Image (cartoon, rainbow, N blue to C red; front, side, top):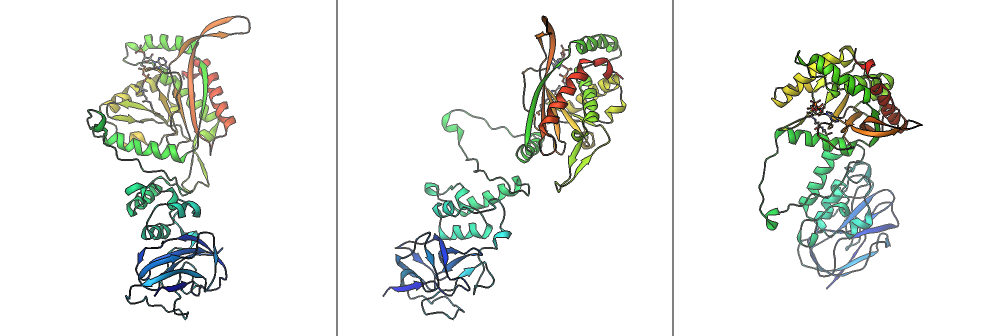
Length: 426
Ligand code: CAO
């Protein structure tokens, strides 16, 4: 004979909302399996089965308001021993499993909302209830505070399985910044050979390492990229004459050396660019030294050696040092210390080409200057067009530290100092 299963004594709640129905007619359930989830404004709890059996009929739906004694379902008992309950409740009542200590819970299932892991911060109950998953997986998701509706299912017909929740949590932990994290669907595993010939290459150690940092910086820093142009007509003439002068000394006077000096001037002019947020994100650490990182492309991947104390070095000293460090980078001779302590990075792609790009800030620095290929351009002087050599600048910055106005001021300032290159030689 079917037994009526009703809401047991649930402490001081007299009307709570059903947020999830975890079983349906025909299901075979064991004692203590969760039947429904209910939620008051203070806690979420699951109502477990008082004994094993087969569900004959479910009498509640998501959104219903229920209280002690409300009928949940009819159950055909299987005759297995009923679950032990300490609650002094009617025969058919069950012991709710609640997150609220005041409730007569046997085992806590969901931690209090404020202790939930934060891939989700807040669970969207509608999408949670619509997710395709078994009761045990739902229970597991609730234990971890995971919003099931945001987990991509890899089971049959997209069913969410326990492993999907583990992957989701792992991703949230590696991508999260303490500010809520970022939940993205896992990348599907695809066999590309189904469409043609393939080969698999192992990523280099540098590729893997820089990939991790670039990914972290891309998803955790609010990036803005400011584009601008600098007139380097006179700078290029000066560079060429200096290059001829220093060629015999084995020093290559490059554009990059001028850019380093210009960035130092920019950091002096706008000190918020020479700063890092501390780990708490509450304080800005302003630096009084001027170490400039240079992105160097090597066969094994990208490395960023640092030119230290660039403010106290002449343009020629910097040019000589650049020759050394880019060679060291390509010969894999850089030491970890050679790549630490940067204040701001320059990524120069001008020798390769391109008009603009959006470099990724090399955190904990707050800005990076991207440089593209210069171009002779007709520029209107007010009376006529003049051919001017224009250098495209792409300044990406961390918008938590640098305002848009300062972003534009920085590139404008770069424009001014690069146009007056004599001032950068000392
Ligand atoms: N526009 C046009 N030509 C440029 C230029 C520019 N902005 N900058 C350099 N060039 C030319 C130079 O004149 C030189 O030409 P010649 O060989 O005819 O003299 C050639 O490009 C090489 O320049 P260079 O020797 O001065 O070297 P560089 O400053 O261009 O590059 C380095 C040095 C280490 C930055 C570079 O080798 C490199 O690795 N660049 C890639 C950086 C990178 O991968 N960034 C991506 C990071 S992702 O954020």
